[in-house]
Image (cartoon, rainbow, N blue to C red; front, top):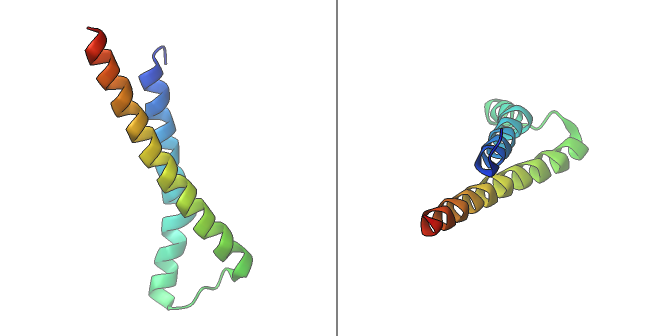
Length: 75
């Protein structure tokens, strides 16, 4: 954990883990039942978490690519 890129990779891993744990399982249950049994509040939270984790993953990948690009330029 001594480089900035490692912090970016940990951030990407945490965002993907949050997406897996907090979103995918609940959406899979919704697809099986065709009913959302978790209530209106968690429906809103689930959508918010989905958008935040996807945005976090995308922005982290963009930052990693910029970091690698500028590292390549400096060599």
